[in-house]
Length: 173
Image (cartoon, rainbow, N blue to C red; front, top):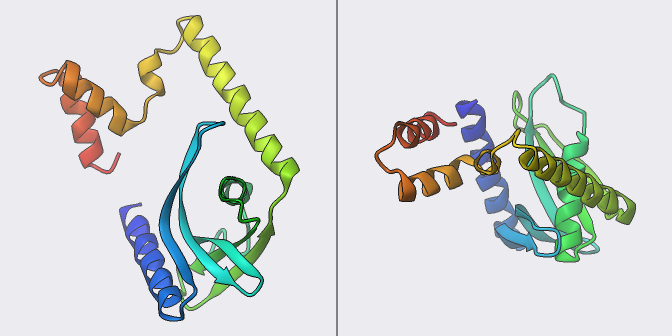
């Protein structure tokens, strides 16, 4: 949990540092936003590859999942490629149990996959709107933890709910 996140962050920094040293790093932790679809994310690295610019995502994996490439990672990279216009990408998998073991997965932009991602997001958003319209889900429940804390801090800074959310966040929520 927290140790895994800390390890993953350290690996990101190490890989980015090595890419910078060899002159391949163009950008690290690059925030991107697709206004049309209201998607946002942070690209681990944009690099100069052998055939031009590439998006690089860095993932750590344990023994149980080693050798697998989850669809959600390919979807994430597809979003980054669609939004940046850089249609070549790589996912670098670092073995959590043996950080010297690295597996690289090359991913080319797939416009059909991108269309599918957009459609899935739109269906999920429509479902949430429907649940809100029926009163089954409060609009407040659709906010992430940080946004909830910001809102409660403005409208109810002395409430138990605000304190509970802050405590949850401090515990790694």
